[in-house]
Image (cartoon, rainbow, N blue to C red; front, side, top):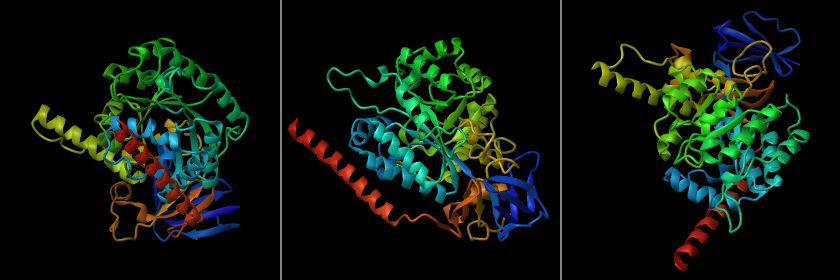
Length: 455
């Protein structure tokens, strides 16, 4: 089956092809066959893009999708409040059905917003049933995803070890690879959401790094937020030769400049959540530090319990924040703002396409509109009032585009959104999501009220 997308400005993000005016993209089955002009339409369904803009599917490199039913709940909480209310409270109230509902609807919202690939960091899976429910939700939505299998973080009960002392469960990794995530070329594949040296003992950190290496999986971990459980743990991990492109660090605050330089030189990738980091108190995003050392900057929503799931907004926030930091540094050091912007809009678009693919270990499949890659494509309607006139298509996409402009979304050659409407039926799902979220939040409030009145 072939599909020819015509009459579009094509931002390929492939340096060998560049940007095309009045360009075309030919898709065969699940892959991009060719990109160019005057392509043969023999046997293909021809779709006129109406002069819109074709871009690679956006990549949300880091999100806890299980929190979709908690939208807005954590908007006024600092990071410490979030840890207390969510990990030690709300998370324990989720059933496998709640995880399934939230993950499926959260993934569908990502497709609706133009995100075709999601780094789903699932750390509310106390049972295999919770894990399977999350995977099922992703698969039913049809999104491409790297499912980062994590572990819950409750307060231990008497006689139980703290979560920082619990190694990542090998049996679950083996079970998932032998079952629902066994196809390394599948739409949904496996990564490990490990604790890392900031949130676990050194013994656990080394076990988890080596486990990921053994199975050839990307290992992603949070870094920052309070004191490290294993001070000096990163030094040991470096000495053991466990760093590389298969290691992904989320946030990254509290790493010093020397560490960042060495990590970037070894190919470690970074997933930054600029809006949520500034909102909750992580500190300023480390975007500029990673750039300075030639590292990979990818971006993520992080928490829909706090902010919107729209990756255009995330990219603008990251770009604006780093430009602001650069401008401020120039004023202080040189007495004036820089002669020109320190970061171009094209780089910000790469953060949510090419570099997102690198962070998830999927750069050979996605991230650009290159022949041979998966046909993950988004059509933006640039004729709408918020984008006209389009003088610089890249800047228009980064600085003006929004959910309103996402006309069509294709994953692996299959449309999931057309003419501004999702093709999935979400009415029943929305009712389930509402009921799930309201029940969970009400139960938390009930418990907290009981604790207050019995103290």
